[in-house]
Amino acid sequence: MVTTDGSTGSPAWRRAARTDLLAFARRSERPEGGFVWLDDAGEPDPDKNLELWINARMTYVFALAHLSGASDTLRLAEHGVRSLQTLFHDDEHGGWYDEVDVDGHTDDTDKRCYGHAHVLLAAATAVAAGAEGAQALLDEATDLHTHHFWEHESGRCVESLSRDWTQVDPYRGANSNMHTVEAYLVAGDVTGHPVWHERALSICERIIGIHARSHGWRIPEHYDHDWTPVPEYNVESPADPFRPYGATPGHAFEWSRLLVQLAASLDEPRPWILEAAEALFAQAVEDTAEDDTPGLAYTTDWHGEPVVRERFHWVMAEAVLAAEALNTYTDSALYAGLASRWWSEIAEHFVDDATGSWHHELGPSMARSTRTWRGKPDAYHAFNALTLPDLPLSPSAALTIGGDIA
Image 1: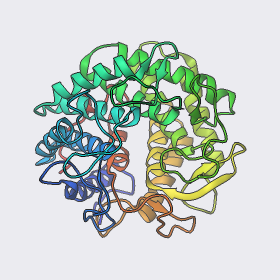
Image 2: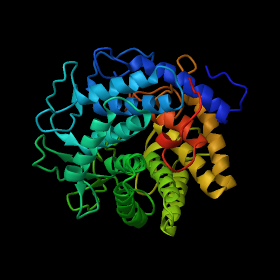
Image 3: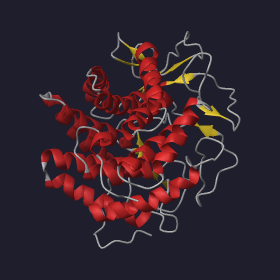
Image 4: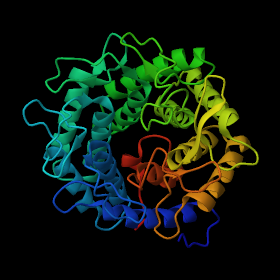
């Protein structure tokens, strides 16, 4: 249970909640290597293999936690770095597999931008934390993004390639590019190379400045090989955890926050960046924030009507992060008020007082649901929500975080 004299959502409240969350996240360590998928009680889910995105995200969380003074987290960050260099690594062709069994074997050998973006994020943050082996991990991650995922002609990243990097999947996705923007901002700050911020801006200009703007600030998530939107993609599978049908308001909030961070990182940010950040935020609020119902719907159709009404913890985390970032950047009472509302809803409905973690999925009635997610495999969104509002918008948290959160 979060115990603090601070009001809900205050820095003191967030600090206490981070401590509880980290205590739960530590349970994911697998002594033989990697981080496991945890169930609701914090026990390993025996039916789940090791997932690249979870391992990279946990490495990132523990690296940031070490930078902020939390005890025994550098060891965990280094455990994650070693796991990425061994269990998940393709020693023949380079890069990382999306999912492996406990022996590091996989039947799915494609290399995907989504997972590789998280490896880049983890590696850059681990370098800032001084984790052993992190620099070599970062060197490989930046090289692979430059030579395989980055598509110069489109100014964005491709989605997936074959194991030997010779075949490119025709599908293009906004989600993987969004996480790439996050990783590129951190990589640029840690390495000092401006190309990463330039590429982050390029992705935002196209996916948000062109596609989201032309779709009424609801972001097309799915595209074909030449970046033509495919609006009916997965219409028969609307609750897919990574490629759902329709618009995903949680991603609109996430893009909004990243745009504000991008603007803060530039000496002369272009006016459209803040305009887009505020427009994305406003449309997502209009589509999902109901006066008498807590939480925010997972997806909507192209008219803003909810399709999947389940409430996910990560959507709440990104909504409150966007509100906090926009409030910091604009000093608007609108954003401060929404942040306060969402912190209260997070505390009342999403924080699991018994474990310190957050419930990952709730139904519209705010009862627990497993329609899309089961268990609690991911501390990354909640940790960011409890950490980033207390830091400058730029440079990245890896360079500015401090204090004791243990």
